[in-house]
Length: 341
Image (cartoon, rainbow, N blue to C red; front, side, top):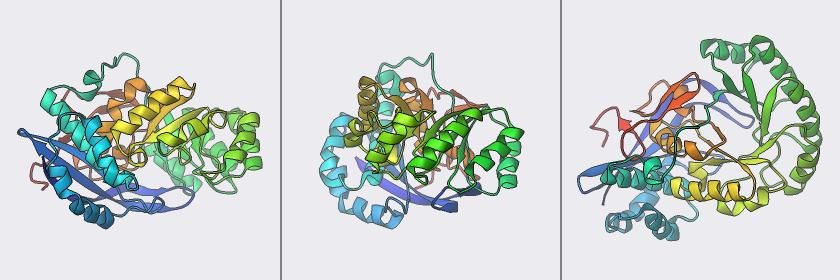
């Protein structure tokens, strides 16, 4: 294979705020793999919370160039296992490589990945649109600008219930709440009671990621379903979520790509957990990969590219939350310009 890569600064339409940070620019790394006249594309965003920078990922990519380029791609899963010897501690970069390998594989085979996986697309969840944490009037203005049947609301203040009450006065759309690990046990239980009254569907990651004992208490007393995000990063975390959460939100960058994400989803189903895949503020390169997993899922959050001013690619069509998958082979992504590299 031939390895290429390029970093981009993705500008968001609005400053995107969560409990621990906010940003207007999302730096991202696009990796391409070429073989047999085909090119596959993958993506990994920079993220300070998990400790991965563009510069660090590029440096590691260069160290692994010969390992990647000397590997003849036949099976993406086998390639993931091979690269995991080098990237077990760098799942973000592994994600970009794995998505590119899966996209390349699908293009070589001439089919979308979901077809190669034998999935039926008759019943797929709709995606939410995320409203970042901000002043209430700003959050309402974002909803006015982007009418949507299903919103994810980012919270993490001492006025969270007031925020949801205000947003509910404006909209009767379904709400999902993401606290991004900013609440404590008592707060979560109390908030679940009020949020249920306000028509909230579920609460995502209320407590700190490794507060497993706290989640046991919340799980026993919460009035709403609980979805793990920061607490469920890799395959090892799935069994820990049983009897602590009702479902898991898999992020491709945290898992290490499509290959382990599929394994996590299938394991979650086996142990009775609801399945969701989320996104960062990726371009359509990352969102294309998320879309291939839709037939497996109960919920999905694949609005990352909708939040951008300058998407560098195009893929599945999303209208009012409903997703129509691209019929292109691989992940279904098309770069908007051919001279990226």
